[in-house]
Image 1 (cartoon, rainbow, N blue to C red):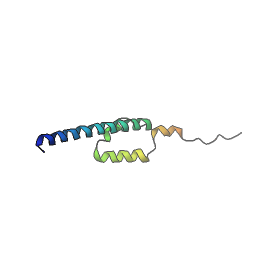
Image 2: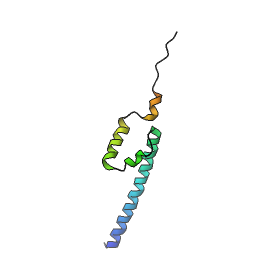
Image 3: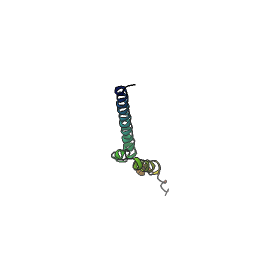
Image 4: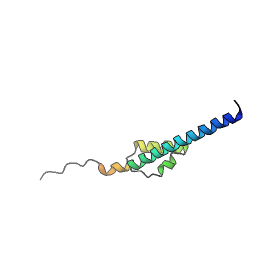
Amino acid sequence: MDISSLMQTGVTSLIVMLVVAVVFLIAWYKIFKKAGYPGWYVILMIIPAINLIIFLIFAFGQWPVLKGSAPQPPAPQV
């Protein structure tokens, strides 16, 4: 293998990785918006240690979209 084929393989791999990353970021954006979180949280998913923290908050926290939909106790009968 010569250097030009190695460079072509590296550039192709980089393009594929960028496309996959963009697809994942778009998916995260849609998930955050549906859960009621701000869409800019997707930027935090790019930062290595912060993305784990955001993921845990997302997984175990109360979703803003569900805060108003808690079951109400039945009204007392008079």
